[in-house]
Length: 597
Image (cartoon, rainbow, N blue to C red; front, side, top):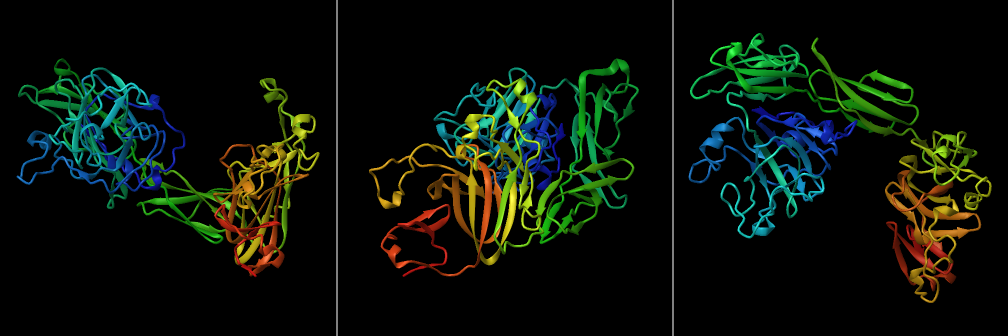
């Protein structure tokens, strides 16, 4: 039996370079123990959609939540009467396992994991189900599809009882299920979120199959090496002892392989395979199908990357870790940090050199280092560029000619005022009359298309700016209809269709009722005070193409005055986009720092 003690640090499991699928799962044909904490980093890590865990026997299909407040599961738990909660045999069988948090959430078809299991294998869950009972008991739902529509186990009934004889799904409750065929199974839950501490896979193994356990990742300070120790426990067959041979190169063990006598220290990723023999190593005494294997892998936490102004620092407390970073034209530079003279996205990772055995590379982390001057004068970003036919895309298009741009560029985005990255351009080709009708201004063909975190700038503390974003006409929903009157004016006898166009700045959407439709296009206006702001992708409906971004410096934030003539029209206060406004006859006025007289 193998023990999953794969150490995954908080940052080490945050990213998956290439998401795995069920096709990447290994078949769990031997008994195995999954400790949820080893995947969730004791409930403090982040799960990865498409992430393999448990030595490759489990897949996180959806990603999801983790927890630290759902109690523990402990195979060695004793009752108040001093007996083992799950019985003597269970406690003895899993004597190497103790209390672990119920940290891995499954929830309906929302948080789902998967595995490949063989016929006759029994799954034993120790988990927590929020103390639910009866038909509402929160138990695993096991199915052959990720949507959990083809369930292999029944929903709980009014008289539901756990496998350890309880009526409540309290911390550590036991649930059992046995596969009647070879399956790829998906595990979610009935009735809402439940939290797994352990999954014991008790496979139908051939007589004599040895038990195998992979120990935790350990550092030997005297040797300066990381290792994992593999233990093989031969079993008796009808009172007769067995002997095991093994290989370390991934090939099947036979009578000519090394004989197992003591735990095997592994210093690199490797697969150790075992074969059992009855009483002595002899080809004729090989136990049929009595093989097992230990998949040994090393995983180290990514470093932390902190930013203080123009300086970044990389820290990895793993023994033997060496840090590296990249930004701009600097690639794979060894070091623990640097001070930049220009804004950049810094990517950092660590290497752990394990003697002559292996070099392990962690996942990477990234952060933006901003070397910017706060906005102290009016700035305007615009776009130049022309549309050309994308011959390749047009050849397969079902909607006509496809246009692209090869010469689009920003004008006015000084690198000391703005940090621009991940930028994508959209086009409205003049040759396409339907698209040309939406150009702003007329004959402009290239536009900013926010697709990520794209343009960052800084407003100094105590300062304020006005932002004016001009979008193309097709960025607006219901562009051809008359603009609705402001709802705060209580006008109900006019068209109620709103022109809807938004931009996203640091997670806040601006637009909506603040939108002004003028002959040139859609203009979104809003004010900002001191802070760091990033234009990023708007996640709502519509393809937002931006013609220009103007930032007008308003100076040190001060009290403004609403003219007396406007006072009577300021009967309503509007809260929108996280800000307060006064509605007046002339429009809306930002309430920040305003005194009405």
